[in-house]
Image (tube, rainbow, N blue to C red; front, top):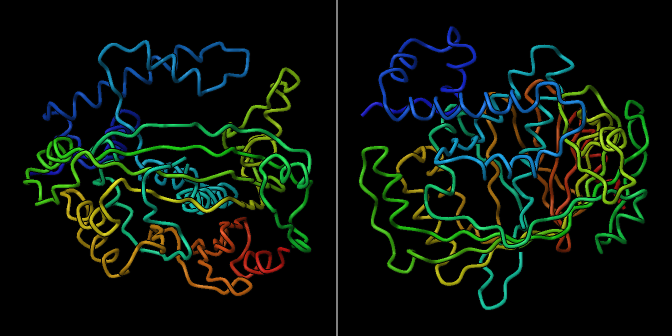
Length: 395
Protein backbone atom coordinates (compact mmCIF):
# COMPACT_ATOMS: atom_id res chain seq x y z
CA UNK A 1 0.00 0.00 0.00
CA UNK A 2 1.42 3.37 -1.03
CA UNK A 3 2.31 5.63 1.89
CA UNK A 4 0.42 8.91 2.10
CA UNK A 5 2.52 12.08 1.77
CA UNK A 6 3.26 13.66 5.15
CA UNK A 7 1.25 16.67 6.35
CA UNK A 8 4.16 18.98 5.61
CA UNK A 9 4.29 17.74 2.01
CA UNK A 10 0.54 18.30 1.63
CA UNK A 11 1.02 21.83 2.93
CA UNK A 12 3.91 22.40 0.51
CA UNK A 13 1.68 21.27 -2.38
CA UNK A 14 -0.66 24.16 -1.49
CA UNK A 15 2.14 26.72 -1.17
CA UNK A 16 4.84 25.52 -3.60
CA UNK A 17 3.48 22.73 -5.82
CA UNK A 18 6.44 22.99 -8.18
CA UNK A 19 8.81 21.99 -5.35
CA UNK A 20 6.98 18.70 -4.69
CA UNK A 21 7.77 15.54 -6.73
CA UNK A 22 5.13 14.55 -9.27
CA UNK A 23 4.27 11.18 -7.59
CA UNK A 24 3.31 12.98 -4.37
CA UNK A 25 1.24 15.57 -6.24
CA UNK A 26 -0.55 12.84 -8.20
CA UNK A 27 -1.28 10.83 -5.06
CA UNK A 28 -2.57 13.88 -3.16
CA UNK A 29 -4.90 14.78 -6.02
CA UNK A 30 -6.39 11.28 -6.32
CA UNK A 31 -6.53 10.23 -2.65
CA UNK A 32 -9.73 11.16 -0.81
CA UNK A 33 -8.00 11.15 2.59
CA UNK A 34 -5.22 13.47 1.39
CA UNK A 35 -7.75 15.79 -0.25
CA UNK A 36 -9.61 16.10 3.07
CA UNK A 37 -6.38 17.01 4.85
CA UNK A 38 -5.50 19.53 2.12
CA UNK A 39 -8.95 21.12 2.24
CA UNK A 40 -8.67 21.45 6.04
CA UNK A 41 -5.26 23.11 5.68
CA UNK A 42 -6.54 25.49 3.01
CA UNK A 43 -9.59 26.41 5.11
CA UNK A 44 -7.43 26.99 8.17
CA UNK A 45 -5.03 29.20 6.20
CA UNK A 46 -7.91 31.22 4.75
CA UNK A 47 -9.44 31.82 8.18
CA UNK A 48 -6.06 32.84 9.64
CA UNK A 49 -5.34 35.19 6.74
CA UNK A 50 -8.74 36.84 7.05
CA UNK A 51 -8.36 37.22 10.81
CA UNK A 52 -4.90 38.79 10.58
CA UNK A 53 -5.49 41.10 7.62
CA UNK A 54 -5.48 44.70 8.77
CA UNK A 55 -4.85 43.79 12.41
CA UNK A 56 -3.28 46.76 14.22
CA UNK A 57 -2.85 45.25 17.68
CA UNK A 58 -0.71 42.46 19.02
CA UNK A 59 -2.57 39.15 19.16
CA UNK A 60 -2.16 36.62 21.96
CA UNK A 61 -2.15 33.38 19.92
CA UNK A 62 -3.22 30.97 22.69
CA UNK A 63 -6.78 32.28 23.36
CA UNK A 64 -7.11 33.15 19.68
CA UNK A 65 -6.42 29.53 18.73
CA UNK A 66 -8.91 28.27 21.32
CA UNK A 67 -11.61 30.57 19.91
CA UNK A 68 -10.83 29.49 16.36
CA UNK A 69 -11.07 25.80 17.21
CA UNK A 70 -14.27 26.24 19.22
CA UNK A 71 -15.87 27.96 16.22
CA UNK A 72 -15.06 25.12 13.80
CA UNK A 73 -17.79 22.73 12.80
CA UNK A 74 -16.43 19.27 12.18
CA UNK A 75 -13.12 20.40 10.68
CA UNK A 76 -10.11 19.14 12.60
CA UNK A 77 -6.91 20.40 10.96
CA UNK A 78 -4.02 17.93 11.09
CA UNK A 79 -1.54 18.65 13.88
CA UNK A 80 1.94 19.83 12.83
CA UNK A 81 4.52 17.13 13.34
CA UNK A 82 8.12 17.45 14.50
CA UNK A 83 9.06 16.97 10.84
CA UNK A 84 7.02 20.08 9.96
CA UNK A 85 8.88 22.12 12.59
CA UNK A 86 12.29 20.90 11.53
CA UNK A 87 11.53 21.41 7.83
CA UNK A 88 10.42 24.96 8.59
CA UNK A 89 13.74 25.56 10.35
CA UNK A 90 15.63 24.30 7.31
CA UNK A 91 13.60 26.53 4.94
CA UNK A 92 14.50 29.54 7.09
CA UNK A 93 18.16 28.77 6.66
CA UNK A 94 18.58 30.31 3.21
CA UNK A 95 21.02 32.90 4.53
CA UNK A 96 23.86 32.24 6.99
CA UNK A 97 22.36 34.47 9.68
CA UNK A 98 19.04 32.67 9.43
CA UNK A 99 20.74 29.26 9.27
CA UNK A 100 22.24 29.89 12.69
CA UNK A 101 18.76 30.63 14.01
CA UNK A 102 17.31 27.56 12.33
CA UNK A 103 19.95 25.23 13.74
CA UNK A 104 19.55 26.80 17.18
CA UNK A 105 15.83 26.14 16.84
CA UNK A 106 16.64 22.45 16.25
CA UNK A 107 18.91 22.39 19.30
CA UNK A 108 16.37 24.11 21.54
CA UNK A 109 13.59 21.88 20.17
CA UNK A 110 15.64 18.82 21.10
CA UNK A 111 16.10 20.24 24.59
CA UNK A 112 12.40 21.11 24.59
CA UNK A 113 11.63 17.39 24.54
CA UNK A 114 12.69 17.47 28.20
CA UNK A 115 10.16 20.12 29.22
CA UNK A 116 7.45 17.95 30.74
CA UNK A 117 4.56 18.71 32.97
CA UNK A 118 2.10 17.25 36.53
CA UNK A 119 0.99 15.78 39.71
CA UNK A 120 0.58 12.17 40.76
CA UNK A 121 -0.70 10.59 43.91
CA UNK A 122 -1.68 6.91 43.71
CA UNK A 123 0.49 5.85 40.78
CA UNK A 124 4.07 4.62 40.56
CA UNK A 125 7.10 6.42 39.18
CA UNK A 126 8.51 4.59 36.17
CA UNK A 127 10.84 7.18 34.65
CA UNK A 128 13.02 10.10 35.70
CA UNK A 129 15.90 11.17 33.44
CA UNK A 130 19.39 10.87 34.87
CA UNK A 131 21.24 10.77 31.57
CA UNK A 132 20.57 11.52 27.91
CA UNK A 133 21.57 9.69 24.75
CA UNK A 134 21.36 10.73 21.10
CA UNK A 135 19.45 8.59 18.60
CA UNK A 136 20.44 9.58 15.03
CA UNK A 137 17.42 9.48 12.72
CA UNK A 138 16.60 10.19 9.10
CA UNK A 139 14.57 13.40 9.10
CA UNK A 140 12.35 12.08 6.30
CA UNK A 141 11.17 9.24 8.54
CA UNK A 142 9.66 11.66 11.04
CA UNK A 143 6.71 12.28 8.74
CA UNK A 144 5.52 8.70 9.25
CA UNK A 145 5.40 8.98 13.04
CA UNK A 146 1.84 9.39 14.39
CA UNK A 147 1.44 11.75 17.34
CA UNK A 148 0.12 10.46 20.66
CA UNK A 149 -3.50 11.05 19.60
CA UNK A 150 -3.01 8.11 17.23
CA UNK A 151 -2.61 5.80 20.23
CA UNK A 152 -5.03 7.27 22.75
CA UNK A 153 -6.05 10.53 24.37
CA UNK A 154 -3.96 13.33 25.86
CA UNK A 155 -5.36 15.52 28.62
CA UNK A 156 -3.77 18.62 30.15
CA UNK A 157 -4.35 18.50 33.89
CA UNK A 158 -2.60 21.75 34.75
CA UNK A 159 -1.24 24.23 32.21
CA UNK A 160 2.11 25.87 33.02
CA UNK A 161 1.90 29.65 33.42
CA UNK A 162 4.61 31.93 32.00
CA UNK A 163 5.94 35.10 33.59
CA UNK A 164 9.01 37.35 33.51
CA UNK A 165 11.57 37.96 36.26
CA UNK A 166 13.86 40.98 36.50
CA UNK A 167 16.86 39.01 37.80
CA UNK A 168 18.19 35.53 38.52
CA UNK A 169 17.30 36.02 42.19
CA UNK A 170 13.75 36.98 41.21
CA UNK A 171 13.48 33.92 38.96
CA UNK A 172 14.74 31.71 41.79
CA UNK A 173 12.18 33.15 44.20
CA UNK A 174 9.36 32.80 41.68
CA UNK A 175 10.24 29.23 40.67
CA UNK A 176 11.43 27.91 44.03
CA UNK A 177 14.51 26.44 42.31
CA UNK A 178 18.13 26.76 43.38
CA UNK A 179 19.49 28.35 40.21
CA UNK A 180 23.05 28.39 38.96
CA UNK A 181 24.76 31.32 37.28
CA UNK A 182 27.32 30.99 34.49
CA UNK A 183 30.85 32.32 34.72
CA UNK A 184 32.36 34.68 32.18
CA UNK A 185 30.61 34.44 28.83
CA UNK A 186 32.32 34.58 25.41
CA UNK A 187 32.92 38.13 24.19
CA UNK A 188 30.55 37.73 21.24
CA UNK A 189 27.58 37.23 23.61
CA UNK A 190 26.35 40.75 24.24
CA UNK A 191 23.33 42.19 26.01
CA UNK A 192 21.55 41.93 29.34
CA UNK A 193 19.97 38.62 30.32
CA UNK A 194 16.19 38.15 30.35
CA UNK A 195 14.57 35.61 32.67
CA UNK A 196 11.39 33.67 31.90
CA UNK A 197 9.65 31.44 34.44
CA UNK A 198 7.21 28.63 33.65
CA UNK A 199 5.30 27.13 36.55
CA UNK A 200 4.78 23.40 37.03
CA UNK A 201 1.98 21.69 35.17
CA UNK A 202 0.70 18.23 34.42
CA UNK A 203 -0.61 16.16 31.53
CA UNK A 204 -1.79 12.59 31.11
CA UNK A 205 -1.96 10.09 28.27
CA UNK A 206 -4.45 7.21 28.23
CA UNK A 207 -3.66 4.37 25.84
CA UNK A 208 -6.53 3.13 23.65
CA UNK A 209 -6.31 -0.16 21.79
CA UNK A 210 -9.09 1.00 19.47
CA UNK A 211 -7.24 4.21 18.55
CA UNK A 212 -3.98 2.30 18.03
CA UNK A 213 -5.79 -0.22 15.81
CA UNK A 214 -7.25 2.61 13.70
CA UNK A 215 -3.74 4.07 13.26
CA UNK A 216 -2.42 0.65 12.21
CA UNK A 217 -5.22 0.36 9.65
CA UNK A 218 -4.01 3.56 7.98
CA UNK A 219 -0.76 1.75 7.22
CA UNK A 220 -2.59 -1.35 6.02
CA UNK A 221 -1.13 -3.45 8.82
CA UNK A 222 -2.64 -5.28 11.81
CA UNK A 223 -2.12 -4.11 15.37
CA UNK A 224 0.62 -6.17 17.08
CA UNK A 225 -0.17 -8.22 20.16
CA UNK A 226 -0.36 -6.04 23.26
CA UNK A 227 -0.40 -6.76 27.02
CA UNK A 228 -3.97 -6.91 28.31
CA UNK A 229 -3.18 -4.31 30.97
CA UNK A 230 -2.17 -1.69 28.39
CA UNK A 231 -5.64 -0.80 27.08
CA UNK A 232 -7.08 2.02 29.21
CA UNK A 233 -3.89 2.50 31.23
CA UNK A 234 -2.59 6.01 31.85
CA UNK A 235 0.72 7.81 32.05
CA UNK A 236 1.10 11.10 33.90
CA UNK A 237 4.02 13.41 33.16
CA UNK A 238 5.09 15.69 35.98
CA UNK A 239 7.69 18.45 35.62
CA UNK A 240 8.58 22.07 36.08
CA UNK A 241 9.04 24.73 37.24
CA UNK A 242 11.33 25.90 34.41
CA UNK A 243 13.55 28.98 34.25
CA UNK A 244 14.82 30.09 30.83
CA UNK A 245 17.56 32.70 30.63
CA UNK A 246 18.21 34.33 27.26
CA UNK A 247 21.04 36.68 26.30
CA UNK A 248 21.49 38.64 23.08
CA UNK A 249 19.59 38.38 19.81
CA UNK A 250 20.55 37.52 16.22
CA UNK A 251 17.55 38.34 14.06
CA UNK A 252 13.80 38.50 14.28
CA UNK A 253 12.29 35.18 13.20
CA UNK A 254 8.88 35.28 14.81
CA UNK A 255 6.75 36.26 17.82
CA UNK A 256 7.92 33.69 20.35
CA UNK A 257 6.80 35.80 23.28
CA UNK A 258 5.49 35.14 26.76
CA UNK A 259 3.10 37.95 27.76
CA UNK A 260 3.69 39.66 31.07
CA UNK A 261 1.18 39.23 33.83
CA UNK A 262 -0.94 42.23 34.70
CA UNK A 263 -1.87 45.41 32.88
CA UNK A 264 1.64 46.86 33.04
CA UNK A 265 2.95 44.57 30.28
CA UNK A 266 2.55 46.48 27.02
CA UNK A 267 2.71 44.97 23.54
CA UNK A 268 6.08 46.65 23.00
CA UNK A 269 7.42 45.23 26.25
CA UNK A 270 6.24 41.73 25.37
CA UNK A 271 7.74 41.94 21.89
CA UNK A 272 11.07 43.05 23.34
CA UNK A 273 11.15 40.24 25.88
CA UNK A 274 10.32 37.29 23.61
CA UNK A 275 10.75 33.81 25.04
CA UNK A 276 13.58 33.22 22.59
CA UNK A 277 15.21 36.60 23.02
CA UNK A 278 15.02 40.35 22.43
CA UNK A 279 12.58 41.60 19.82
CA UNK A 280 11.12 38.11 19.41
CA UNK A 281 14.36 36.98 17.72
CA UNK A 282 16.60 33.99 18.20
CA UNK A 283 18.93 34.62 21.18
CA UNK A 284 22.68 34.17 21.11
CA UNK A 285 22.53 32.15 24.33
CA UNK A 286 19.79 30.15 26.09
CA UNK A 287 20.21 28.63 29.55
CA UNK A 288 17.47 26.31 30.80
CA UNK A 289 17.17 25.15 34.41
CA UNK A 290 14.22 22.98 35.41
CA UNK A 291 13.06 20.35 37.85
CA UNK A 292 13.64 16.95 36.26
CA UNK A 293 10.44 15.57 34.72
CA UNK A 294 8.96 12.40 36.20
CA UNK A 295 6.71 9.91 34.40
CA UNK A 296 4.17 7.91 36.38
CA UNK A 297 2.13 4.85 35.36
CA UNK A 298 -1.04 3.41 36.88
CA UNK A 299 0.07 -0.13 36.01
CA UNK A 300 2.22 -1.05 32.97
CA UNK A 301 5.98 -0.67 33.16
CA UNK A 302 8.11 1.55 30.95
CA UNK A 303 9.35 -1.61 29.18
CA UNK A 304 5.79 -2.64 28.30
CA UNK A 305 5.01 0.81 26.88
CA UNK A 306 8.31 0.81 25.01
CA UNK A 307 7.69 -2.60 23.42
CA UNK A 308 4.15 -1.65 22.43
CA UNK A 309 4.87 1.77 20.93
CA UNK A 310 8.04 0.74 19.10
CA UNK A 311 6.21 -2.17 17.46
CA UNK A 312 3.44 0.07 16.08
CA UNK A 313 3.10 0.42 12.29
CA UNK A 314 4.57 3.74 11.18
CA UNK A 315 7.52 3.64 13.58
CA UNK A 316 10.69 3.25 11.44
CA UNK A 317 12.38 -0.08 12.12
CA UNK A 318 15.79 1.61 12.35
CA UNK A 319 14.53 3.99 15.06
CA UNK A 320 12.88 1.15 17.00
CA UNK A 321 16.04 -0.97 16.92
CA UNK A 322 18.20 1.94 18.12
CA UNK A 323 15.90 2.67 21.05
CA UNK A 324 15.68 -1.02 22.00
CA UNK A 325 19.47 -1.22 21.92
CA UNK A 326 19.66 1.43 24.64
CA UNK A 327 18.42 -1.07 27.22
CA UNK A 328 16.58 0.09 30.35
CA UNK A 329 14.90 3.44 29.65
CA UNK A 330 13.70 4.06 33.20
CA UNK A 331 16.46 6.64 33.70
CA UNK A 332 17.85 7.30 30.21
CA UNK A 333 16.07 9.69 27.86
CA UNK A 334 16.73 9.17 24.12
CA UNK A 335 16.81 12.42 22.12
CA UNK A 336 16.28 12.17 18.34
CA UNK A 337 19.02 13.92 16.36
CA UNK A 338 18.42 14.53 12.61
CA UNK A 339 21.42 13.06 10.80
CA UNK A 340 21.52 15.78 8.16
CA UNK A 341 21.27 18.70 10.58
CA UNK A 342 23.08 17.85 13.80
CA UNK A 343 25.53 15.57 15.53
CA UNK A 344 25.98 14.62 19.18
CA UNK A 345 28.63 13.37 21.58
CA UNK A 346 29.03 12.84 25.32
CA UNK A 347 30.75 15.27 27.68
CA UNK A 348 31.43 15.40 31.41
CA UNK A 349 29.77 18.41 33.08
CA UNK A 350 31.30 18.73 36.54
CA UNK A 351 30.92 15.01 37.21
CA UNK A 352 27.54 14.59 35.52
CA UNK A 353 27.11 12.89 32.12
CA UNK A 354 26.11 15.45 29.49
CA UNK A 355 24.97 15.20 25.89
CA UNK A 356 26.30 17.80 23.43
CA UNK A 357 24.13 18.52 20.38
CA UNK A 358 25.71 20.51 17.58
CA UNK A 359 24.98 21.75 14.08
CA UNK A 360 27.06 19.81 11.57
CA UNK A 361 28.61 23.10 10.35
CA UNK A 362 29.55 24.28 13.85
CA UNK A 363 27.27 27.34 13.76
CA UNK A 364 25.17 26.46 16.83
CA UNK A 365 25.42 23.94 19.67
CA UNK A 366 23.79 22.91 22.92
CA UNK A 367 24.46 20.65 25.89
CA UNK A 368 22.03 19.07 28.36
CA UNK A 369 22.72 17.29 31.65
CA UNK A 370 21.08 16.37 34.96
CA UNK A 371 22.34 16.96 38.48
CA UNK A 372 20.69 16.70 41.90
CA UNK A 373 17.16 16.40 40.51
CA UNK A 374 17.46 19.32 38.09
CA UNK A 375 17.89 19.26 34.33
CA UNK A 376 20.14 21.92 32.79
CA UNK A 377 20.63 22.99 29.20
CA UNK A 378 22.90 25.52 27.50
CA UNK A 379 22.46 26.35 23.80
CA UNK A 380 23.52 29.15 21.52
CA UNK A 381 25.16 30.34 18.32
CA UNK A 382 28.43 28.98 19.68
CA UNK A 383 30.78 26.06 19.17
CA UNK A 384 30.35 22.87 21.15
CA UNK A 385 33.49 23.70 23.15
CA UNK A 386 32.02 27.07 24.11
CA UNK A 387 28.68 25.71 25.33
CA UNK A 388 30.46 22.99 27.31
CA UNK A 389 32.74 25.61 28.86
CA UNK A 390 29.71 27.72 29.86
CA UNK A 391 28.02 24.62 31.31
CA UNK A 392 31.08 23.74 33.36
CA UNK A 393 31.37 27.32 34.61
CA UNK A 394 27.88 27.35 36.16
CA UNK A 395 27.96 27.64 39.90
